[in-house]
Length: 138
Image (cartoon, rainbow, N blue to C red; front, side, top):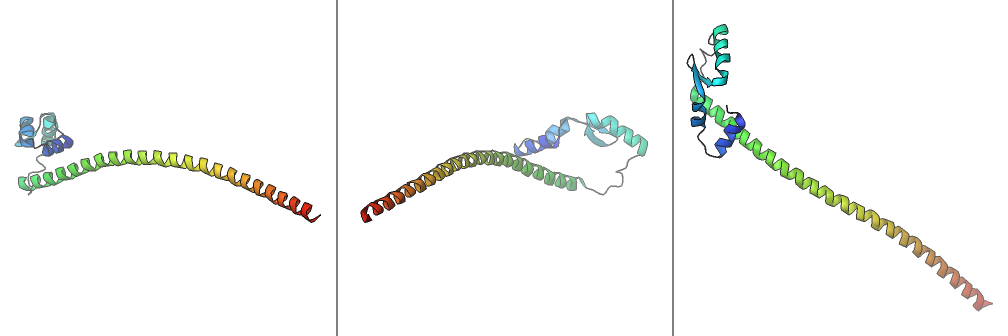
């Protein structure tokens, strides 16, 4: 069986979707369906009749709709891939930020200690000047 993701992959890889799909289809009262869905479709047709009998949708319209959906899936896959790359970049950036914050905190602590020491030294200088001034004047 084939799902939409596989169809999108084949579309991107230029593989013939039609050949792949046709090889896995069977006919049920004029409808081409996957073999796995044949029994279910047969039961629906038997119980409810051909509910799509009066449908005006042309196969060209269906193919156009399908192509549009496949393009959307392909774009979504690209977004998912890019999203993964962006998440990795975000995580790396967060690690760098955490390291910078840690270093900043360390430097701030060292700065505070240096400011306290500078204040103590200034007090000692002021005391020494006052003491010298006292001795000079007396």
